[in-house]
Length: 285
Image (cartoon, rainbow, N blue to C red; front, side, top):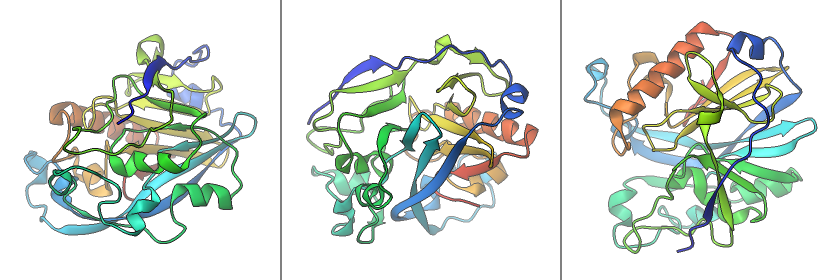
């Protein structure tokens, strides 16, 4: 299985020092939601049922969408946040996941309609894709990379691992890709309550927010456009129920305590800036 080299993502000069400054100057950037399939999944995989606030939440199966987002900047061009499911999930609930442990580590049903994969969607929209910013590299966020160009910028949080237990459980999502570029937030400004955040284009339009816990290098994103500001939580908050009850991600998280702190910072931010629309990992309110 191919593993790309890791290189630092070079950020522009970071000049904005608080969210009021950023949000008072929206930019010419747009966001479009793209659904690449559905998952049938137990809510216990989304919610940390051991958290005190989860008391009383009934365990149940949910059918949820698998999203990625098309980000269109007026002069920086078109980017994706995440890549969704690849088209192998049209034929098999496990897609092209390989290895004898695939049913154990992918204990859910996956579905995708014909033409719903991200490659087909990008062709339909005639998108000249410049890069992909990943919230994290779980299969439902990264496998669509198999249908995208290999010479674009592919950006992850620092130390975010490719999900693999070769040869027991794996995909080869990055075959042909030379490098993954990592965001190092240490060189960025501290923007309370979210901590050090990266102004990706240097104009306050598109922000990367470190939200570790669900995965080691998990990143959430903020789009600050003239049509509105949108917080993309990724799986730092899978569904609105997490947000409403203040319960962090559940089973399979890298560090549940860290994931809980990341969720709490996102909630504090959204409560301070109520004009922001929140797009959860697998739910659009």
